[in-house]
Length: 248
Image (cartoon, rainbow, N blue to C red; front, side):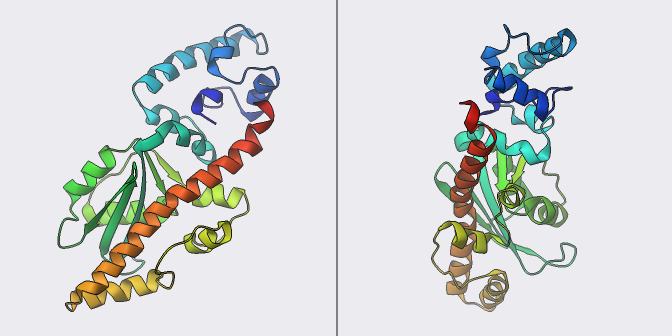
């Protein structure tokens, strides 16, 4: 499902009205102009909104839609983002963003993965460059953890449109942490015995001079970011069939 199939970003159009449009065969913006499903006032509002929406698509402006879509429907932007979607994950020395440190941050975009390491290349400017290259951030629990942690640690503001997969996962019955959900849906990873606590221990070993510990931590962090892409595809596919499949 692409954003061009959606109408709920328009003021005055909720999910019930959107379904009425789909049921009438209006499943794409291009189908709308000749329809008489809506009242004249709402029809005019949709026509005006679609003009801005088409301009936003041409400019790759995902913020136009992210600001207007209900947060739980932001997954509808995923297919449009394409290779400009950025799957990211952080590792830290603990859970307190005011006392603990960010150790590594991995970004997976367009089949390439970049990892920034504290004390080497993990800086506010490096983070800014990575986020500015992205039209859509994809994380797992990033709204509550990763983004606030980075903003506090680096005194920055991250305002790239954001899809937090934890919530659509819950909607389709996938509960628990990222690794548990990966196992449930059949996504494999190496170093399966590394978890958040072990990631902290690996960083402490690296601080004492163990470069192999850092290598393992980076592999773990990169796997988190890469596996988000695989999980996103599966979750969005389920939601697509659930929400829009009957109208194709």
